[in-house]
Image (cartoon, rainbow over all chains, first blue to last red; front, side, top):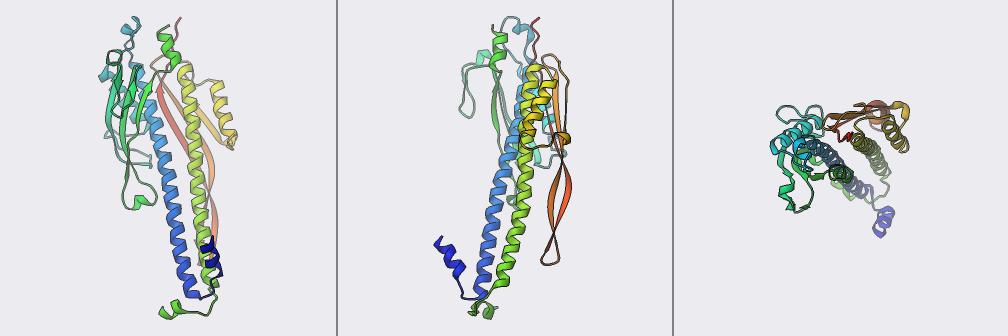
Length: 177
Length: 141
């Protein structure tokens, strides 16, 4: 506060005020850009994670109905992965090479880094990021490149959302009454 | 330049005025950008809430649509400018359900004309949100 008071009361000359104004403006611009970049990145991260969650949940369409009759939740890995990729493509509006279409938030291709289905026989297990799995679940980790406003002028930032999705309790009870 | 920097005569009113104008311009520009990002974030939350409900109900019902509209109007969105479409209930386990939310809005942008004049321009903006997954609706009967 003292620095601000001294700055306001400074009568030494227009040259000093001009230099100080320039420094102040540059500092203000930098702070605004950093805050906006941070908010933008957190927004994109939440959006991508939400769309990834929808793709994770779509995997449960591949529950083996024959095994379900014996009250066992089982999802085939190949069928599950195909479903996950189908819905990730739909939700992030990706083309055949996993590049974004009209979505300007993502740049470059989206990569599926990890996709694991934890079936009953795999439990208990631990995900690659150290979470304990006790229910039949789907784990995925993807990588997307984002270009924020300020930092985007120099390069891109890679986001790695990872997500463990299990069935809602109510549905588990439906299968295991 | 050296003489300008060593000037001890006081004043500097024009420099301060210019600094204030530039800072105001930065604030106005960033303010609108943040508003657009915030609205997008709220619409995204509404979409996810809608899809959560649709997944267990097996599609979009009148109650879910009303709940999504209420969520958004409660946060300052205009119901008349809102369009909600999706897979109508009821679809069975494993079938696709999709939800699309569109919101027609206006965005204020600022253009500099000349050295000291800033003009406010109102431009139309459409928020478009889409999400799809599969139905969890399970008919036990």
